[in-house]
Image (cartoon, rainbow, N blue to C red):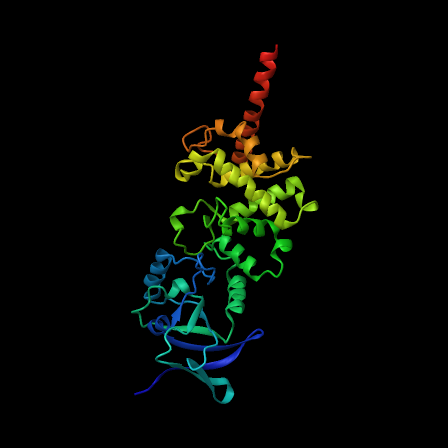
Length: 341
């Protein structure tokens, strides 16, 4: 009895990377491969969450007459004894995979095509990178899928963060957003959707992309990085959201019925953070400062999804919410003037 699964093909190059190209039944490729989906709890992996509908649509299509697909893309990560490529003359080669090795192919670009083909024997072409590390594999996935429809922009942001050599200075808005998500003291702790899977999935309030874009707006409006380091700004932003969670506790604890944590709320509140920071000259801009300032006006605003903000969206909606908040700030002052008369 043979101890290996053998697939015949050729060894060549895909630009600057060596690859093995071959053909095999879909069911065999399914058995030998896995998708390295991002586990947000551990930070391991890099693929998007599995989309059953997308995969079922492909299963239905690929079994139709005259169907076809571009080659599936895999990687054989270094794993001594699990697989071997035996090279023959003129580029021909045999890929031998130990039957005890389990799933040795990582699905670089074919997760949803293979997802429901476990019992389908249609022959498919494939290309397999040879011996890429997990990091190199992620880099290639990012290049292939950076413009892919349906791929989470937050997942691409997470890739950028993982691959960056100096994230704090290269993309400070992303660095700060990830600090909010990763700091156990943060009210956003593990509640930003990174595009992978997480045991805290039901608690997610906003996406990583939404938060980092809102922070980018804050950085632009305040020019704060001219005076403070990215780490110091991250602490300031954390203090601000801690203050929000205290002053608006009831709304914060009911994210599904409030706009506070939705995109429009995040953008608007980071704009108000800009206002408060720019007014803080000579004061310590910390949680105590933000809490005291926010308590003067923000709790009077109706953040419910059925309130005055209902139906608002996009850039115009954000500007409207900012206008509502700023007008609310003026009311106590106007009342004081009236009483003084």
